[in-house]
Image (tube, rainbow, N blue to C red):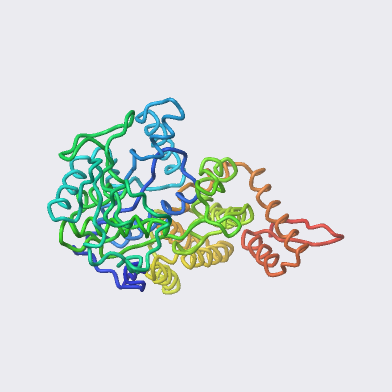
Length: 462
């Protein structure tokens, strides 16, 4: 049985979808005013694996990932660039799709844009006004009345009297409570605006997701995902809006992925310590980036470094080298108890809150068996390699033919072997003996023997 860590209850729970055989999942997407960075990649890849795994288990998955295409940052960037908001957002939506394709992401079932769901946003705000969960200020802004929603803080596990407000709220903001948040911003000169019964303006960020998710998936749905930085206040506010408007539970399972860090700090645009996906793609393939991300559990923090990316490349290369010299088959004809044990272990670790690091370990154990069989029983090796590919596909890996991965170049293969040897030499210099032994074993599994003599390391095939 699949268990998922639910941020709402802060514990793992057995997954039971609302409708048998169907899963509805909403994941917070990108605000399209700049190129996607590696922090975005962590979230996109993490939930792509979730969707892939659910589908591999026979579920019919409706995957919704929104696009925020109206926002303060978008307006400011368009003004700074002296271009229209439409031109800016279309350009970065195109760039986002290119990055997603490079990372091997499945296309979402629905990808709603905020500007295309204005009627649903207005309808939800009106319901909140009708039920006194919202109020209109003299300036035409609409705010959510936080203290009226008795469950506010249920996701972040914060209490109203314990919440800290970053700064004193100016009197002219006309909020009833400093914690109240905006649902509708009244129009300002030169900014885009939509007509509303309470005056022209544009929506706040939080209401967009509540309106789009409930319209696309229903008033209650199975899974809501996003980065841990969105848990409060964004997701907390989504719950408050949706449940007040519908009087129904909003989401059953909340999932939040951990950050990518550089020097123990979260990678983010606000801190100025981020790398865009396309910058990293200049040095590493999209599949290497994907491997790098899923080598860490989705809830864990992931440290960005060239060393870690290099290790991901080495590990992925080992899997492709394993498949290169094995006959490819399209179905498994031989039932093997030993092989079934690996398959069962793969599903067991994935059923434990999508434990991709352990799933990768199973793949590498399978690769070792393929290499062993390939020297004695090529038919058995082909069967084991078939299972390796099948399980890897669930993670979005090994999607290429090995020849394409190596670009049919023997010099490239030799370069990869030399890179591994250089990494082993460096590990020995730094007295990381376990790491050095791991690399030697990795090369051995690839059919490469090392000889250390006269201060040099040379290699040959077995």
